[in-house]
Image 1 (cartoon, rainbow, N blue to C red):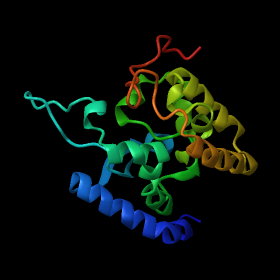
Image 2: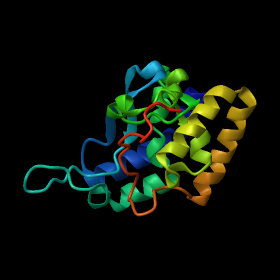
Image 3: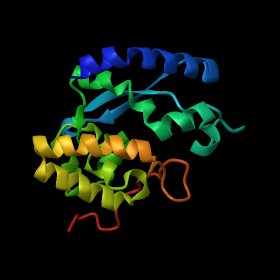
Length: 193
């Protein structure tokens, strides 16, 4: 299915790649290590949405200052996620599953939150249709674990359908008061009880 979609969407992917190159230059694809099944690292692919602008000390500027108008549009429409079809083809990602977050978050999870890695991560998931970035980290992880315990073919079909609806509604793109999402620093109750 991912191969078929990639072929069908290849004209769109090529156009986006050209627009990203014209607006931000190379590289067009953003690559980053993310934890996959059982926390095993893999390289995720996305269209680049931010510049690498830094302050006078060499530190990256905030997401809001680095996010370009093209990047904002790609994120709003979720078109920045299209290169992840390659991750599905490679077997690193599923269409549906908990979204792969940052490697540095792994030691910050409670044992219960870490259960989100018991299944392969996905391009979309239960948390994405239940609030996306507009919900708290704790709410997101509860939804991820609920998916782990209740996953099924029909639930995946429902999530895919609802994701299409959410993309058109453009809801939950960022957390209140943030251009993207605040960093997850860990839950207060590390026991997960």
